[in-house]
Image (tube, rainbow, N blue to C red; front, top):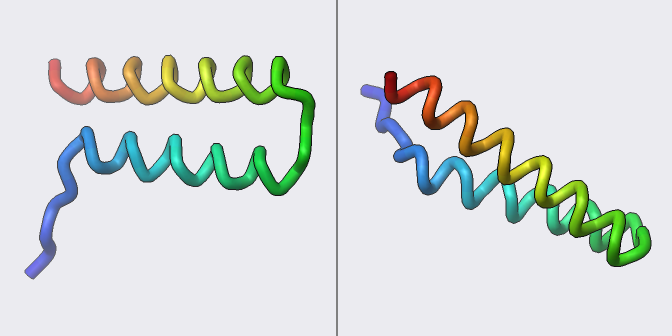
Length: 52
């Protein structure tokens, strides 16, 4: 039996993973903030689309 993950948990895992990858990459802070912002917006868009 599959256990479903909530949208909030999935979004936090996604943002956490992207943050870890950006930390390892060592990019400038401004670039990191931009990428994280687009990631968060993408998560919000997909969550809203799924909830409709």
